[in-house]
Image 1 (tube, rainbow, N blue to C red):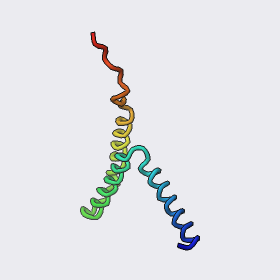
Image 2: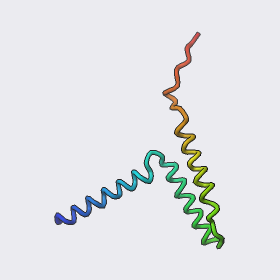
Image 3: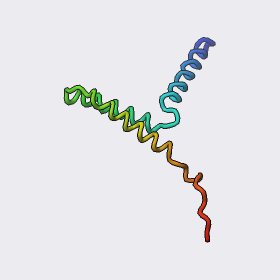
Image 4: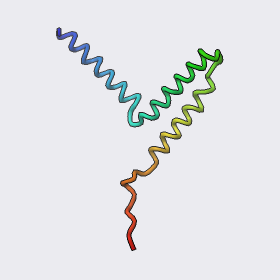
Length: 85
């Protein structure tokens, strides 16, 4: 493989890794929720022929709220042990 092609492949791999980390980040469920919302919005727009602009704002708020709820929940191992009396 020529040197220039390796440099391009390395740059493409770096950009792909950055985009994956930026989009998915720490919460893959939130990224999946947004993808599902976008797919549902596209299906409604093409299938029903109506404008689905109303779907995304409450959907994103719901995905964000679920993500915050999951993040704010204490880890099971972080709970103090109950003392036996």
